[in-house]
Length: 85
Image (cartoon, rainbow, N blue to C red; front, side, top):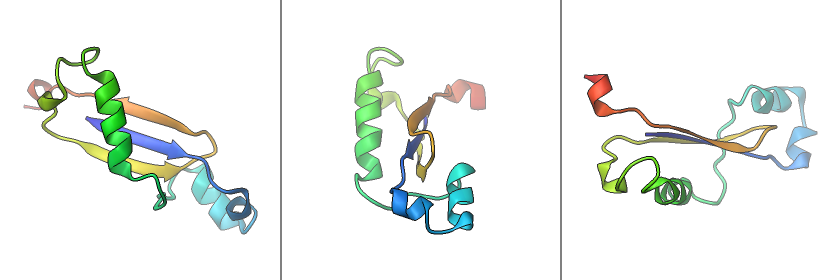
């Protein structure tokens, strides 16, 4: 399972430099502020349980990233382990 959490950025950061704005526009600037990434993961996996899979105990591999973006959103990708073999 892969979760990408794109969060908005404070306006003062966007106004500070062209380089910083470009990092956010390209979605390459990691967010190291609260809330914690593990909280996002838990919320998404709990919400998807019973809909996308039977139990979140089935998750064997997880990749999570929290980035700044001009378009805040959460992206979820689920891949079967059988497809990876």
